[in-house]
Amino acid sequence: MTAADVGSPTKDFAHHGTIRLATNGERPTAEQVAGVIAGVPVIGKACEALIGAGWRASIAGNRITVNDEVLAQFIGAGIGPAGGVDARWVIYAIGGTPPVWVVGAERQP
Image (cartoon, rainbow, N blue to C red; front, side):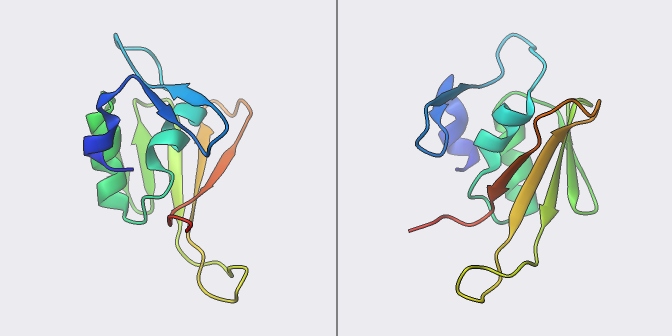
């Protein structure tokens, strides 16, 4: 998903329904942030997509802070099912409230 894809108020998230993106200054949820950055393997592009969704987003190291409410951490090295590198995003509310979302950073075929 790219910043250009974020214009609609709803987006399909992992083929399990739709998520509602930020409107009218609402506080983002971890699920909404996960829906925007799933499949984005570059932290700068993920930050741009979150800004395009209407939130404040800033990068610090391998993390993006969204509206001072949600953290998205990029984990770039992991063992994939076929033995290759499998990058992931771990998204959670700063207040520590569940759930924690883990989404792939690379599009699946």
